[in-house]
Image (cartoon, rainbow, N blue to C red; front, side, top):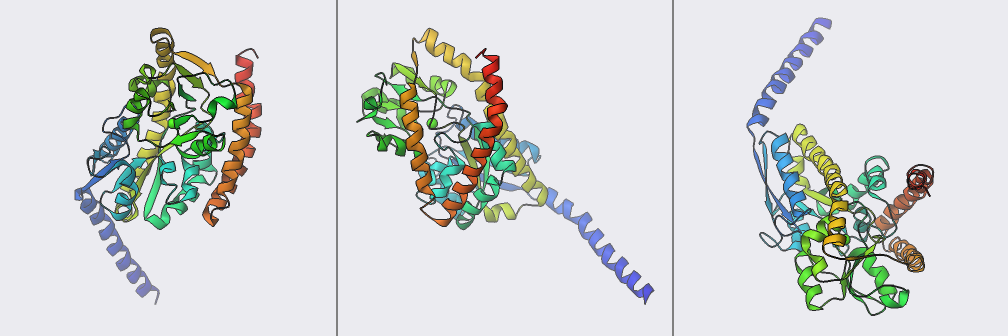
Length: 360
Ligand code: CA
């Protein structure tokens, strides 16, 4: 009896050993040719190049077993149709920002930027160690997509204006390109938010089709030439305090990969997420000095009273999303709980330190 079990065990073991020896050989030969569609124009500074870098990382880390070809907005599908395209499998990956998909899922907005929400460091903490990533996967599951965080901009700038913003009155009637929940807040205060893809912002501001715009921060905005179309640059970017850009993968395509390649795709995204933030943090101040000293941009801080009102309205707007559907409620509750606790921690760590370092 024992001997038979032993033989059975050995037999089974040898089959498994044989299979596990053969499997890597098969996978080593398997090549995956993937298409990545993006919401950014091809090679767009900072964002389109971020998508390129992620694709290059996946190619490199997989030793060429996954070849990702990047398509700019409109090359394969228009910018705002990439979510559907990857969901249907027209392309295997997409690169964008989750607040573009609020028409699909209100909850999606929490995974890009929330006015007066989490900073980059806090966002990554929520996603990777606070339950955020699990909720993001659950939110995209019905669309057959696997999301990853693929770049973080850090705190953005408040935007470009051709008049000073001294009170809330100055926001009334203002036609401004500002996406997501920030746009909703502006609307409540009497402004008109406009949604424009990145490629159309400069000409719209220059021609006066819009009065103001926000984009990212000095490094990206300088590359865009926004200073040629507006006089004042305001800070801080209350509406986008640490915007996460995303990569999403067709779930079937993802699950067809062997485990090591799945890990490479997920971890390449993590590297890109950190590297994008590092790059912008390293470049932003130099770009800001160029804007102010060379291009004579007038740098302004939003008055406290304006920021206070924006904060109050933002809290209302964000809380209202929780009432839209069950998933939004679940994500809102997790996000809010995390923000409350990390704010307490950062009061005695980041904020206390930054104040002390500034001599405040
Ligand atoms: Ca922005």
